[in-house]
Every structure is written in structure tokens, then in C-alpha cells.
Image (tube, rainbow, N blue to C red):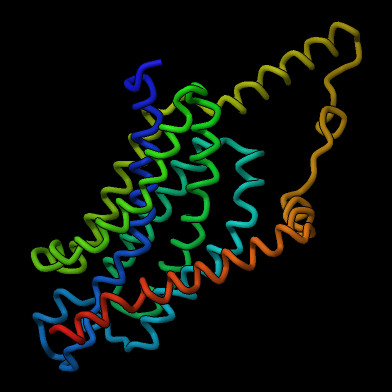
Length: 279
């Protein structure tokens, strides 16, 4: 299998992942607490906190808990939903939602509007990796799976790098224009994924199996089976509680929580600190 054959699958998913990271992290670089003059038009053009009017504590809430609260909860259920529903649709739909949240942020005039957009973004961003990695598993030939996963995994670093480079865009088109640009990138990545990625093979197999079951039932004069008769399903909530009941998983969950918290503290305040330390 040539590398060219996996490009239509991996590249759109990679761009969606880059959009995910860029959208969530760009806020770190679009604030500036070095200028306390609320009437400074130049500062308001490049710094959202100066334009909208919020302080360090409110920024900390925006950059951390507003995003991570719903993101963390939704992430627990994202895997189960990806097992049940169309992963291509989840990928495209979630990218459109967080891009919408980015557009809303760009047009916000009040802190509460930015807060609501940030919460919505956290909800949508949780679906990226669970759908992406499993789509690669099912769509990419096994001999190219490791390469595809490594390319896809680089999205977190590419997105983080673009977030820091948002400072360059900010200086030219302002924080609102930068957010609009990031949102447009996300919409483009979602559109490319919708056009380029094949249908979710899981859904195609389920459709074929359902058709075969109905055909066999009719042939035996049994009638179409009900959903309960066809397959007993568990709920996403029960899936999560079953997994979290395993002690080893609990330790892994606690460790990843602490690791994420430490990384988030650095990410949220590093850019703001350097602007203060090196104005």
C-alpha cells in the first residue's frame, strides 16, 4: 500500500485535529495584561481582555475550567458514542461546532458570551481523538497504521505551534480577525473531511447486517426483529461506570488528570507571563 492511498484519510483528520488544538489554545496568546488603560484602542485591537473587559481571574476561568469542565465529562462518553454512531459524522459535526464557537468568540462584546462559547467549544472538542484514531484503525491498511497514527498524533503539536503563531496574525488583523481566521480553518477542515473520508465502515457493516437479518426473518415468516431482539445494547453511562470501576483505570485516570492540570497551568499562563516579563 502506497502512502498516497492513506492521504485522503489521514490529512483531513490531521487538519481537524490541528483545528481542535488551535481553536482551544489560541486564547492564551490573544490576551495582554501589561496595559491597564481601558481606553487604549491599539491594545483593544490585539487583546480580547482589553476589548471586552475582563481581568486575570476571569481569563483564568475562561482558559481553564470553562473549557475543561464539560470537555472532561464529555470525554468520558465520547468513546462510547463513537462505538455506536457514525464517527465520520461525529468528526465533521464536532469540528463545525467548535468552529461556530470560535466565530461566536470573535463577535462577542461581553464576557458572558465568550464564556458560553468556551463551554460549547469544550463540549465539541472532546470527540476528536476517539473518532479519529478508530477511523484510522478501520480505514487504513494495517501495514500503514503506525505511520497514519503518528501523522495524526502530530496534530496536537502543529495546533499548539499555530496557536503561538497567532500572535503574528493578531498584530496584523487583530484578535477578532485572528479568531475568524481560525474558525474558517476549522470549517475548511470539516468540509474536506466530509468530502474526502469514506463512510464509516462500522455503519456500513451494521446496515448490511440489519438488511440480512430482516431478509432472513421475512424468509422464515418471523417478521422484522425489534432492536432489543436484534442486539442487546448497554448505555454510554453504564459503559463509563464499568470501565471506571477497574482499579488500574482509576489510577491511570488520576495520573492523567494531574498531568493535564500541570500542563494546563503552564499553557494558560506562559504567554501572559512572558508579555508581562518582557514587554
